[in-house]
Image (spheres, one colour):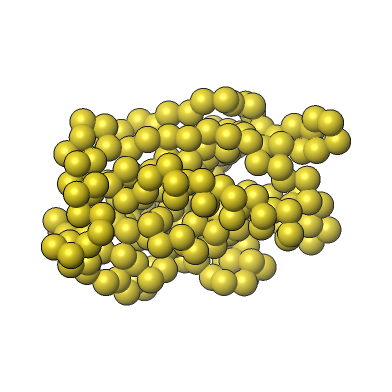
Length: 210
């Protein structure tokens, strides 16, 4: 991916200075929220356009999350920065070996262009893991075999790792609607429950109006 632009935040005058410091020093500074999304309309559009559900969903979530400023904050070299653009990093299962690879794809505004680039990247990448996860990405993974109600991640690296992580499970039909288990994990230094609520409202509207 090309170098990404970011702005260094002057934390001395930043409105989240106190909250950031409190949660940055917490034993577990990340928290997780699980919920269900109504993807009835979104599934119809995916099928109509013959898109990959996973890639279309990753693109939609990325656009919605990036519309909310707090999701673009990161720690970088002991400073707080906000990126102009957040890219994508997702797991993709090799069904023959039953091992996944981590695929990194730059964000593109047009969904069809993104899906095409993601497919090419998946096909061309031979390595399972190409290196540490970048700072300027959202991380995605799916469990299409499970209708989960709770989710937790393994933790590696420093507690300052603040990439939001999105996961989804097996969708199912109920009362004429299709529901998707969805997990959001964020760093409390930057994102409160209020901001998670804003994101959920935003993504649900987008899934309705796609």
